[in-house]
Amino acid sequence: MTVSPASPQIEAFLEMMAVERDASPHTLSAYARDLNDAEDAASGGLMAADETAIEGWFADLSRRGLSPATQARRRSAVRQFYRFALAEGWRADDPSRRLDAPRQGRPLPKTLSRDEIERLIAAASAREGAAGARLICLMELAYASGLRVSELLGLKVQAVRRDPTHLIVRGKGGKERLAPLNDAARTAVKAWLILRDADKARADSSWLFPSGGKSGHLTPRRFAQLLDQAAVDAGIDPARVSPHVLRHAFATHLLEGGADLRIVQTLLGHADIATTQIYTHVATDRLTQVMTSKHPLAKGD
Figure 1 (cartoon, rainbow, N blue to C red):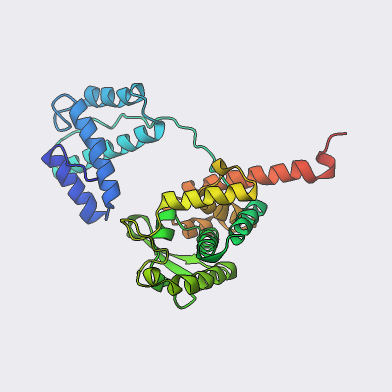
Figure 2 (figure 1 turned 120 degrees about the vertical axis):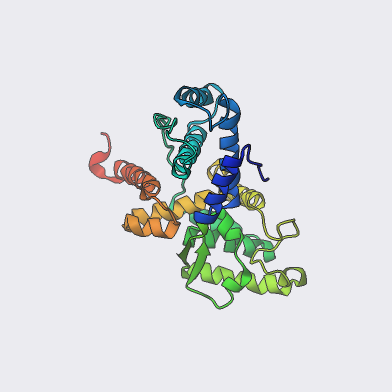
């Protein structure tokens, strides 16, 4: 859903973000919502607001019950807007300069053990026909490559026709990266393509995972529902399983296996290595649990 800017200055800022920084429509809508909120709350709007007005708006975000993550995003949007306003000569000062980022404890991402991943795939393998082959392909691709769910479901069939060892993926901000495919993923893709192409309705689609919905391909919600059922069949709490958890497992298991953090950052498509570092905590916690439970000197009498 497109959000209309509340002022010409906000509209100009959003245009700059789209043209110069290649911001996605989703990002632009989020910025528009955040800046419109500040525009409405600050007396006289963003162009007339002083430090007291901006700081009052920001303090009110917490009282309104907004999460620390949402507060941080709105702070970032307003600060970027005022830097743009300074550069354009619209203002001679930055009333957002004293805004402190909200403190937020960053939760560790959910993940699954290698055994649980194998059980999920085995549960999918127990399904017969195209439905089972599709789910195995989805899971193997997600776990082998660390693709975001939008990247996975948005794959075109031509990307895998020639049995590639890697995919070229366009991620956030339009940046391209290589996503590796292991033997299990490639085998799953081949099995799915045979059944997919045998179905006339699917064969005519350009998507790897076609669907009759508006988008033309499988939706994240439907993929999540399929994973929930596989989790139940595998004896795993469905609350612990989601398409994104497969991406987390990819990163965590790489680090547990000794992969370099910078390599994992590149594979995940993270712009900031700090985002990737969260997985080192997950991997360390898991190794500590193994050490505590398996090492003979760590056991109690």
